Length: 312
Image (cartoon, rainbow, N blue to C red; front, side, top):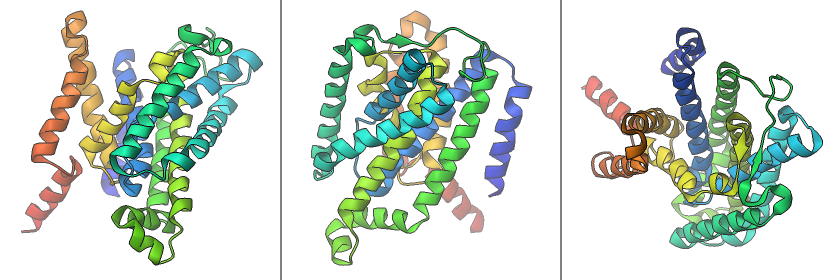
């Protein structure tokens, strides 16, 4: 509990101590990817179904939020949660056939889902087609449109706290224990009376809803969304990587992975400039290889090892 309080106090004090917009943006992106990794972790970590298509739900939330803002002038304060609901509905529809699959078949199905979603949005002219849609330029708290990074930081900070609380509450509830049981041995869990199909769907829908909410924030934050950026396989892989790097199936792991990987990748991208195009992806791959070799259970094991060493 004490480390968590220290982190929260440090994050709350950060925008007052550091006013550089670029540094604030890095922290915002780290919070976002940590939350996306934690959302994915409900399915990939606790349930044990590795999805490479979670960008579908981020894109659903992003497009819903911006389309409602552009077409109906609906505030993102309402559009963002509605985006989460749309993402949850998409997960419910596609989850019925895909959750019957296991292992690499499920992973391949989620990649196919991502490709289909990208193709559909590219050819949907009402939603901007291949060119995408933009948020209006304004300075309005009601529309979540600001000229500085600081307000977005506080929104990301608040959403991150809500996401962390939600994942902790779910993981420590009976639902979380059912997910772990299904992950350990689905046949044994069924024999003990666990309604596996219902709880697999619940994990998928809740994970999608949280991802969709962050998709809405992402769209408003960058002010633009298109099929290539919203339904990107690279984006889906980045979500998976922060969870794997920090520790799959743990509550803090995805946040640790994002705290290390996002600033490091952004720093290298700036340092390399245009000559380092794609270097961040190489860095992601290298990080995963090193973690797989030396910390197969993620960065979270460093804390465990240090605690064990201190007790001896």
